[in-house]
Image 1: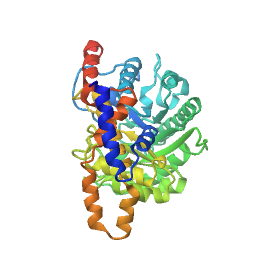
Image 2: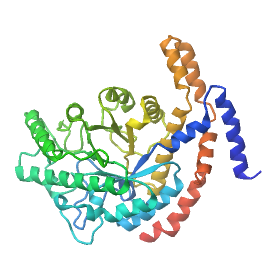
Image 3: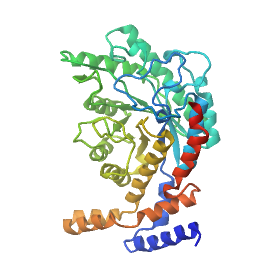
Image 4: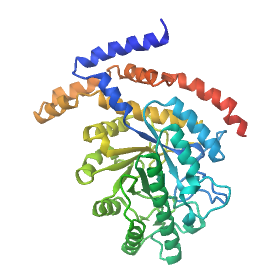
Length: 420
């Protein structure tokens, strides 16, 4: 039996099995195909960026390891992304940071313009995909004090305000050119290492700066603003200016997207529990899905309990209201594999959620049939969803199962290792 025949046979068995629970697997796959996942460009080069006078990372951002084959320029990064897109099924987007501009001449961050990202727009058009964007408030002399938009120095503060305004213009142009709203996420590293006396003053300055950055109204058809909190970072252990409470209030007051990063909270907190609450008050939210082995350690996303819980909450609360982005950077393994493994796991978790009889489970809960609900949830864990995902990959013309590693190993040998 040919491999494709085997995959289809197993899928038909799985389809019948799920049908007994009232679940249409064909419909689930159709929905999965329409849920975009935004791949993060910074996994491909260890958050180095392509500035001509790069200052390196800072603000608690650190990609550890020295695995060979890191992309050294935009052309190499796009080549790696081309390959990743060939190995990952479904709808994909690309999430860019401002430090990934593509230009021959040095450009200060407060002077970046859409033309410095034209090659990325052209690439996205060719791939029939869309772009998301992020200002880069780190790895720069003007961020040396770990204070940017909240700095008491008006010169530093104004520099970063200009950077934020420039980035919104770039995001707007990306959305216009590609016909899909560009999600622009604002995260800053601002904070204090030791005892902080006047937290309120720093947060007032941050409000004033953000108000200036977001002053111009831009059509949501072209771009949408998100703000992202963090618990703490290296060098800002005692106080993070942009805390969860700060940005939750700011997003609500200003009708912005709130970004929930799975590594940016206390070790015992999970963002899966926050999604439903946030969506009761906000029209849309952004997720940065990561794996915090030791808090914000940004490991490659695996198919663990929290990923499954995140995906279930996305499906239960309306996937169209949740923008999914990945955010991790591991330099100890092949970077193309990191993208492929993490994104496919995100999709597997979404599929598992789509294959749950959500109404039946909700009705059981409403009727206090908790024993039956627990039993059904546990039975779902051993249902043949893997056969459904394999079929999805086959229909999307990407490698099925572990076979994607054959292509990664070949690409590493013929392309990535030659960069050394």
